[in-house]
Image (cartoon, chains in turn green, blue):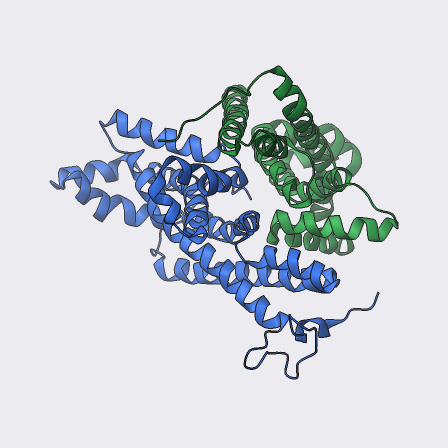
Length: 222
Length: 252
């Protein structure tokens, strides 16, 4: 049996190696969720608009994004973004852009399901009230779609949080990278990988318990 | 910008363009290498899928067994454990931590370790689907099996599982496509699969766009082929008059 040595575990270690990475992982999760839901909703509205010139590009975008591994998308953006805007961007900015673009495709499918789950009668009721298409969406359909989809959106956010570890591919300093760097510095990779496992598990597990509770609440009210 | 597809015909050592694009004799072109990388991706994914299906089915069934609360708890713990740790971290665990804790595993080739990581990660999702599939069946089917005098093993084998597997073919399809996408993470421990190829050859040839396009297309083709295979199975396994309802949404 291997002797594990956690003696380097103290505040300096956490402050020096972990907090920066944790902060980046959390920021990336929040920004990608907000941006992804925003653009995902736009994509969903495009796909449901019935206008061919809106439906086709949105469907193409979503299907392409969903058929490619996230790591490849990360590498694509890391390569293309500097090429398009003509100057190098850091791995961190590149990660933000990638995750918003990638998650928009996944969130759009969730929002599409959410919008379609609203009974058609509500749309007709809105139209009968004299509401325009935009008013109907904004005041009647979308608020309910969001509310119904909150558990699914949050579950996707937990998956997103776990997926932020993939920025490893372009060397951004996230939570996993923080543990890895510490492991190299102290010559204790086994212990730091174990600690990374525990931290990711605790965060994801507690978030999914919260989602379970929210799911129960929403299910009761409806 | 100008694309230069001839890059795949070049020899990997001296960069000379080979006629016919495939290397002959001792020469290896980037195209040869690309196909070998695709082979690695396919073998990692398919082996991982087999492990995931076997482990996922066992755990999924365990979670629905009547009157065995400890087995159910074990199954639930398994799912929560493998679902709440990022795949990349799990790959590092199998690659660095497990061999250090279990010395005989030091002799395992990296391929086996990655396949175990991918298989067990996916087994948690498949277990969830198998459980949902079994629980979606009317309770009466279980009781009918019992009333026929079947043992637990028999009524699972002859009554519940044949129906449950048919119900969960659609989510199993997307999970099988996901495993091809998730196999990309194996690049982190230097398995010579497609993503590793893209990183290395993109840099070596200074033609990353062409290389990434080729790799991306191969991923899409792999996922599409799996999708068609499962669609074929779904058609063949259909029970006339039985409406199949999809369960749950897949992650990525």
